[in-house]
Length: 148
Image (cartoon, rainbow, N blue to C red):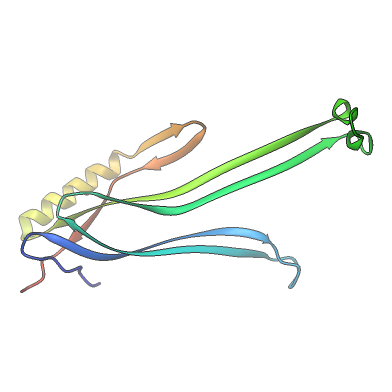
């Protein structure tokens, strides 16, 4: 495990790679196995110890339309709506990563950061915003100061 460089002012510089893999449409080759779609971002960030940075940018928007109803009748112009329904669905997903590096100078700092992380794991919160359910937790990255 490599440690990100830390300068004398407790500024931590690190490379962060974010990736999201989705299941794509089934492939017509190879017996209909699903394909995987991967999106990836690599960022170089510099942030002071104990300050947070938010990384985003991996956004996915899906729109789909569908219809159902009595065969043939729901496809008729003008009166087709009486024999079926049409639906439109739109979803948006965005990956956000919150990183708070902590520079650890000695054993006491390490114990404090460890205790903070244990408390944070117990304090996971469930957020339900407009029908989207997900967990939110601040990530804490530890970094040892580089010897310069």
